[in-house]
Amino acid sequence: MKTYFDSRFALSPNEGKQLDTKGLRDHFLMEQLFEADAIHLTLSHYDRYITGGVMPVQEEVSLSNPENLKAGYFLERRELGMINVGGKGIVVADGITYELEYKEALYLGKGTKEVVFSSVEANTPAKFYLNSAPAHHTYPSKKVSKAEAEVVELGSAATANHRVINKLIVNSVLPTCQLQMGMTELKSGSVWNTMPAHTHDRRMEVYFYFEVPEGQSVCHFMGQPQETRHVWMQNEQAIISPNWSVHSGAGTSNYTFIWGMAGENLDYGDMDHCAITELR
Image: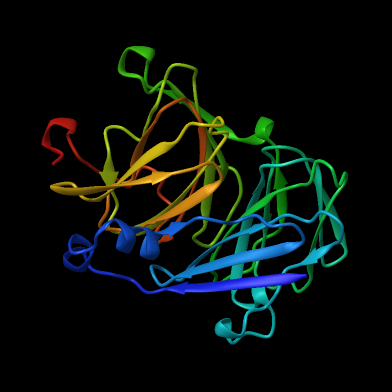
């Protein structure tokens, strides 16, 4: 089993303005999350959020404990959320077995010592997309199916942003310390996500784009509302969004994305909206 760990320092808006295309990509983009029988982890110093990917194929993959965390085990002081974006998978957490189908989620509370990932079929491996945040309290681990999600339908075909939001790991579904995760599915013909755009000074966020058709891409917008930048992204890539940054995107086709966030509160509606006509 291979473990890859990357650490990204936080930047201020003024520093962010000075970055060229490569600089933006180096600081915020996570280009590879899934590799056979490996785990990829990226720590962002914005709220010490960790984004990762696990794809077990020929063997089981254990949740590693990077030296950088200075912990006895990965979830000693953390909570973990995951959504399976591949074939059927199995997660064994402290001896309890959870089976995750495509687009099903699992929350693991602080204090979970051993986590092992595996796939049911090697030719259609599971792909566990991971998000983790520091935790101060232990809440029960729980699997969340799409049927158990809080579902909201927004937008319209007329504005090319007709989408379904599946709130999977949020406080209206299960208790967490600060981690929240969900999945937004764009309808055919719609390409814009999170528009009108917004910031939330009290939380950071990470976007993971998938179900991007072959040969298509997503243009992700970030930066302060009056000083936006863009990053072109491919299928199964993720990007860090600082608390001072908008986070929105437009694809050359419809797609699905997973949003995850952490910070001071669990209020999903805590957003500072930006009028579309005022974006620069």
